[in-house]
Length: 292
Image (cartoon, rainbow, N blue to C red):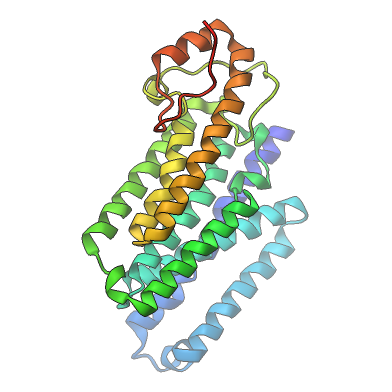
């Protein structure tokens, strides 16, 4: 029963994400149908913004009617991320200097949504609202808002700083590669992956050393570290690049050391041997020290 309920949550998230993404329909109608009187009258300028607000209100109303309790909480979060992704697409293809922020919106919203969806696919027993990683930590929220503020201030004061096209494109490619590899690593880990460090070994818990884990001991954390930095490269945010590098490196150093204490407890000598042979994946982080 629990398994079917969690699978249902994954399906609901897909439907809700697509519903939020539907906001691009309004933009497409205006772009290609503004010569039609009713579209011009009701979907352009201020009326267009009202139409978008009305669309989101109606969608949220339907979600509230269809889904109850925890299912609604899943649906409204997925819908919000789909809406953010749709707005990012609109910015990405608009004739504006905010194009690269549109790329950022797409990458950020897809990251959070796909974390939930892949968890639903690989480890449904650990699936919860926290799997969206939207409430990751206060520090994470502050860091995200800081990057938005930096981009906005520099965009307004030094706009040419945000138009280093080749650097933004490099950042985008890095984000796409990093996102793909992180999800591949999660799929490889399967039910062994959990967003929360586990202090008790589950019956299904095994030591994964194949695939990307043959190259790095902590590929998911390594790619999370990189996915924090790559969007800042895409946004040409020099202050946040430096700040994110220091803060996230320190966080993952402590997180890896904490997790490896439990991994050695779970798998004993097998993990110690694996640790000797395989790099963590993060620079200057070797993990917990083990006495020979």
